Image 1 (tube, helix red, strand yellow):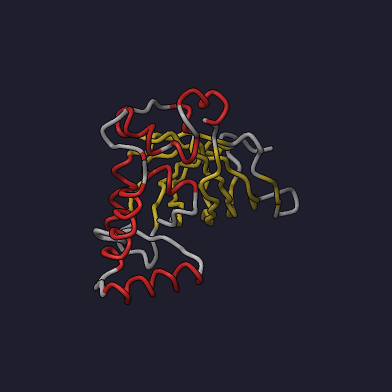
Image 2: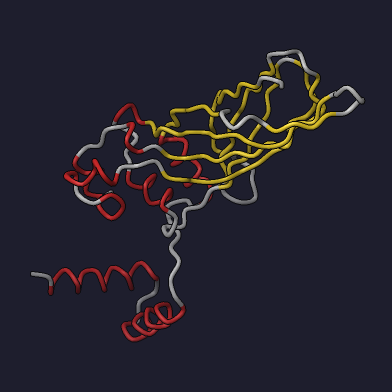
Length: 217
């Protein structure tokens, strides 16, 4: 069995992608000298929120995900952020490859809500990530060709700067964000906008929020 080690060298915002994307630069090492013809690599990426601290403003923004601080011992747990894959070209010993990380600013996605809430000025401005690898390796076997699995224990961690995420958002959603709503809700919002003559959705939502604040005790 070959021995593989994966290291994340960097994570950066991809400036020329058609859709929002981060890219992880991976270093892949094979320790036995086996000739690798190719590797179909899969990766689960998890956010590990329990591995950093949070100031009071962040804690308030994270209540919808983890509740109040007194509950964090039960609720602050690692969660799946995304699954991605790539193909590693043939190599012997060591190679480097880019792992595309398709991202979204959809607030229905837990990772997006979490990353929106954390501050780049807190805890060194990083988010702890865990990369867990799997996949299939095509090697030179006894009969000229061999196939083996990436071992289940191939994983690594990386401290991703919050600024990298914010850079990706700014590239794809400059000065704005993205939120999904039900068709009936959109229809009601549209009616409210037309009724009051608002020229933008920002005006419409701000009016509703201000009205809610006025009637709240």
